[in-house]
Image 1: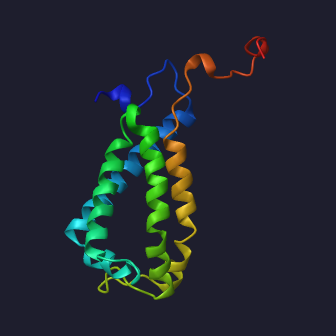
Image 2: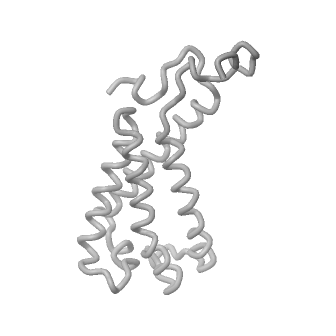
Image 3: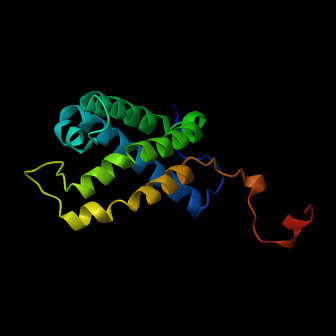
Length: 157
């Protein structure tokens, strides 16, 4: 992997593309970090797995592996789009655990309790995470496809 795979190499990347690159890296680091936590401190994640799902520890470990893999795959351009779709699927798949956490007021870490209102408030953030995953998975527009707003750019339309 080289730098051009992480940050779009263009003569003058737009602010949007620079921001997309930064958000992509932050999301990738967050996913890898949370994925690792599924192995280093699995108890909280096991607690929030709904009772109707089998093998909670196994599910926590599988989701941790997937989070790490998708976080890493989000960085290179060649796997970025597929990783972003995978993250959307992951966010949908783990949503029942987040609902279970809020409904049953389950603490990830009883030593550092989360307020109940925060458990409920974080649920809509899944939509934000889905939108962010889709946004960072987009390929940057080549310079030839960028609009400068000048009239000559619109001649072929």
